[in-house]
Length: 156
Image (cartoon, rainbow, N blue to C red; front, side, top):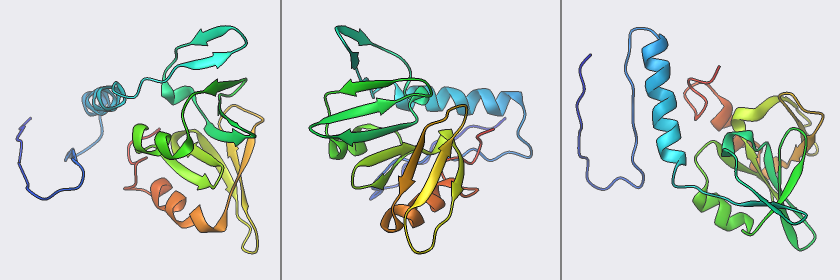
């Protein structure tokens, strides 16, 4: 395996490309390690009742505004957080994308999207009954992130 680092001036964001003949266990482990390292900087405390919770961001299906608060939804629960959606967009890894004015969604947790040309489309999530609408305005970017070669290129 060859490894090289290229420094390219003027980039808005660092990019890591893995070129391989096939995706095997080694490539998957490298990919997972890079994801874990890039998400290590995003530490979010989740609150419910009088408790603080700490769990991986991968467990979050979506973040949604409810009244004055922002909630992080997992497959089975919801937790309050102390960030605004625009702050989350800057803090979260690229697997999270805006779905509407009031929601940011984890593209790795999307199971299906029921497309509606005239209105919002319905998102369903892996292993959960929870659903969320993606507005027409944000739909194209969400689809781009879900497409092969988007941020889900090696998900499985």
